[in-house]
Length: 164
Ligand SMILES: CC(C)(COP(=O)(O)OP(=O)(O)OC[C@H]1O[C@@H](n2cnc3c(N)ncnc32)[C@H](O)[C@@H]1OP(=O)(O)O)[C@@H](O)C(=O)NCCC(=O)NCCS
Image (cartoon, rainbow, N blue to C red):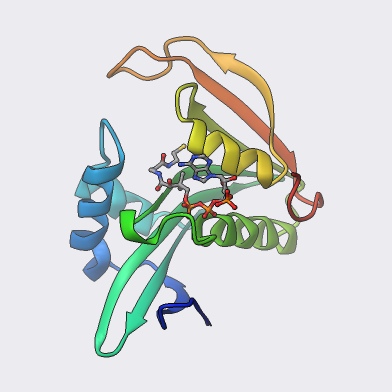
């Protein structure tokens, strides 16, 4: 549990089916092609998918502030989705979730982390670089909607903290 200057309390929790309406609203505001409810439901059922949320609580109001979904397969962790509700961005929530992913991967014995990101998504690319990821390749026209290229980024699990 942590808090910010405005008195919001933040806590990490497992994603639940009841979170999906809020998550779908964050998706719609965050992505050109948002994931559907069915895609989230599939992830919630997969044993190797880790689905986490950060809840923000102030007074009596609790809302989903951020979420992350990643797969742990053999010695590798693959980031599938991460987003932060607009009003909670640039408060370190995504960095916190990325660090948590690395810690869970480390505890599970994984040693590599990977992800794909749109080449134009400079905010996310900055975040990943800060978390120790480096560009290892490109998948041409990876995204069906805009035909944009994906950057493939990698990081060692043991690599620690921020790289500024
Ligand atoms: C990308 C995203 C997850 C970042 O979440 P966040 O909680 O705001 O990120 P953090 O506060 O942990 O940011 C850590 C660092 O990443 C970099 N960063 C994050 N967002 C950035 C932006 N919009 N522009 C430039 N740099 C950014 C900064 O270096 C930042 O540190 P600083 O705030 O001290 O400058 C969020 O903007 C988001 O939900 N975007 C839409 C969904 C998305 O693109 N997801 C990634 C798909 S691959």
